[in-house]
Image (cartoon, rainbow, N blue to C red; front, side, top):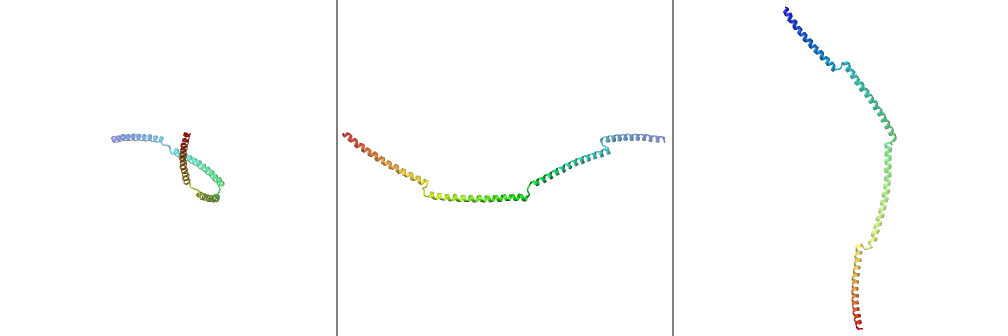
Length: 178
């Protein structure tokens, strides 16, 4: 029995020693894990701080957005008082267009009257001008007159030379006779 009990006690001592070693290893591993991870209260505090910071940030941004909206609303209100309504603006444009159309109609009538006067003046000028010879006709006439005059002068010159030659011949004979 002692042998059986002794073997069993040795075996239990070995198992107990292995169990202690395993427990120590597990305790060391847990200590290492605790060093890497925050505790639950630390984690809750971190989340609360993040949410608080985020809430503060959002509150500031919301306040800034409200201020910008109020400023924009005041700007729109002040600009509405400075601008005319659509009806007023349309009335103004219609008046301008009406005045412009009246002015253009007057100017168009004056232009047509001036055109009609110029057309009449041109017709009168053309009628008066038709009584005169055209430039080519006048040039042909002048060339004909100058040509006839040149031929006439040439004939007269030849006649004078002939008469002079006769005169010199007759006068030259008398001078020899004397």
